[in-house]
Image (cartoon, rainbow, N blue to C red; front, top):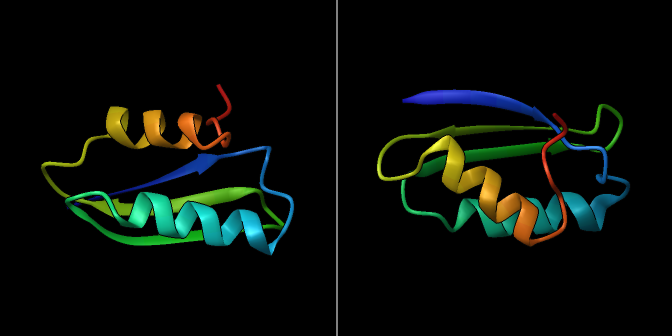
Length: 68
């Protein structure tokens, strides 16, 4: 299992946190999603078949792209 933390500048409210948790949490292989408004970060634990590329793509699709 891997755990990664992403900087996501678009996190600005509890709705953002909820959306990220629901959308990323629905991916096969994702076991935990935490997002924080104050740090604007999301920490995601996952295993295959989920990958960082898949997670980043989903975040971008829901308008929460990972900061470079």
